[in-house]
Amino acid sequence: MTAAELGQLNLEEPPSPRPIRTVDCFQILQQIGEGTYGQVYMAKEVKTGQIVALKKIRTENEKEGFPITAIREIKILSKLQHENVIKLKEIVTSQEAEEHSDELSAENSNYNGSVYLVLEYMDHDLTGLSDRPGLRFTVPQIKVSLSQCYMKQLLSGLHYCHANEVLHRDIKGANLLLDNNGSLKLADFGLAHACPDHHKANLTNRVVTLPYRPPELLLGATKYGPAVDIWSAGCIFAEFLCGKLIMFGRNEPEQLHKIFELCGSPDETIWPGVSKMPWYNNFKPARPMRRRLREVLLHRLDTHALDLLDRMLTLDPSKRISAKDALDAEYFWMEPLPCDPNLPKYESSHEFQSKKKRLQQRLKEEIAKRQKLPYPPPHVRLPPIQRAGPPFQEHWGETNYSMSRYQRIPSSGPSKPYSNPVTDASLPSRYPPRGYNPSHGSQAGPVPAGQYHLHGRAGPYRGSSMPNRSTTDGYAAGPSGYSHGNQYGVNAGHGPNSVASNRNQQYGWQQQG
Ligand SMILES: Nc1ncnc2c1ncn2[C@@H]1O[C@H](COP(=O)(O)OP(=O)(O)OP(=O)(O)O)[C@@H](O)[C@H]1O
Image 1 (cartoon, rainbow, N blue to C red):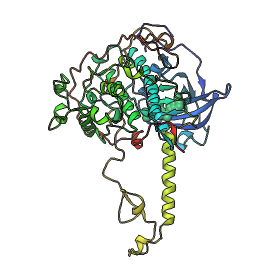
Image 2: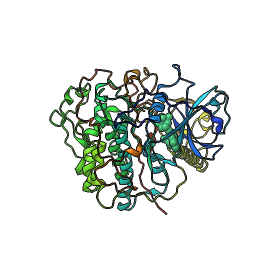
Image 3: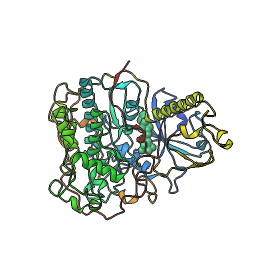
Image 4: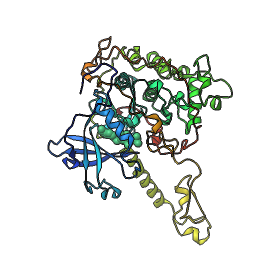
C-alpha cells in the first residue's frame, strides 16, 4: 500500500497481485450474519486455526454479474487501514458445490462458484450485543465511560474515512462491530462512496437506514457529504445514552416528522437553502416546530454529552459538527476519560443470532400458549369447520385470516416498519448507477493508520492519540442544485430492514442478576 497524503484514497490503483485461494482453506463454523447481499460465517483457517469472518457475496440473483456493492466494498476496504475500520484480509473463491456446514442453505448447495470476503472476526455487533438479555446500563458512570469509549472509536473511524473521502452511508448498530477487548470497528462498506469531492457529485439519497437517515437526504438532497454519517453517529450516541432510538418513524415522511418534533422544523434562518430542497414543500410542517432536543434530554444527559449531541444532530449539514471537531469535544476530555470498557467476556452476539433466538423464543411461547389453552374453546359455538384446527386468531396477533383458517390474507400494512436503503426496484443493487462514478478517485493510497495520529490533545484513550488535522473540511458547502427526482413512495417503509426488530434496544453492559 502506498503511503499517501491525507485524504487521498486511490481506488483506481489495482490491488497488489496475489494468488487467490479457495474457500477450502477455511472451515465454516457457523452463520453469524445474513445481509441483503449474502451470508456471513464465522470460520477457521485450516492451516493456522485463526478465526475469521467470511462474507459470501450472493451472485445467484444478480442479472448484471458481480454486484456493484461488493465491488465497491472490496475496493474501499482494501485501501482503508485503520484500527476502527474492519480489515479485509483477502478474497477467496469457491468453484463447486459447497457443503461446509448445516448452516449453508439448500439454495447454495448447487451453486457453482462464489466469492467470499475474508474479514477479521469480531465477537459482536452493537445491535446483537445490546439485545442480550440481562445487559443493561445501570450505573451512570459506566454508561458515560462506555458511550465515550465507543463513540470515540466510532468518530475516529469516521474521521479516518472522511479524511480519505469515503462516506460510509449506512452507520447503524448492526454495522458497528465490537470485540471482547472493547474495540469498535466500522463494517459493511457496501453503500460507501469514495470520491474526491462528494459535494459536486450527484449521489443517490436512498441511502442510510431510515432511523439513522439525516434530514438532508429525507428532503431529497443529491449533493451531500460526510455530515450524513455524523447524523447517523449522533443517533447512535443518543441510543447509547437513552437506551433507545430517539427518533423513529415507520416511513420517510414520519421519520422527517419525528426529526422536526425533536430538532425543530427548518427554515431559511437556521438552514439557508432548505426551502429550495426538492421535497421541502411537500414535507414542511403546517406550523413551525421549535427545537426541543436539549429540554427533552436535559434530565438524561450531562451538559457535555448534550452539547455534543446537539451539534451532531444539527439540521443544517453545513453547520453539523465534523468527526474531527467532535473528537475534540469536551465530552471526550472530561472525567472519567474514555477507557477500555471492562466488558465481561460474552459469547458472540450478532444481530442475526439474536433475531434467531427471539424467533425461537416466540415459537416456544406460541407452542406453550397453545398447549395451555383448552381446545376446542369451551364457550365458543363455532361451526364444525372452525373447530377443527388450532385457534389461530388468538395466537397470531394482527395477522388476518380468511374464513378458512389455512388461507392467510396478507395484511395491508408494511411488513417491516421501514425500508433498507436503496430498495427502489428500478435500481439493480444498493448502488444505483447514478450514485457511482468509478472514475472518481485520486492518485494516491490512503493514510496508513499508523501515520494517522496527529491530534492536538494527547489521546487519553487506549494509549493512542487522535488525528489533529483534517484535509476534509467537507462541511462548508451547502446543498445546491438538487435534482428533482422521485418523491417518497417507492418502497417507502416497506422493505426489509435488519434493525427493524430492535427498536427498544438497550445499550448497556452491566449484567443484571
Ligand atoms: N467481520 C465480522 N465479524 C463478525 N461479524 C460480522 C463481520 N462482518 C459482518 N458480521 C455480521 O454479519 C452481519 C451482516 O454483515 P454486513 O452488514 O457486512 O452484511 P450485508 O449483507 O452488507 O448486510 P446488510 O444487508 O444489513 O447491509 C453484521 O451485522 C454482523 O453481525
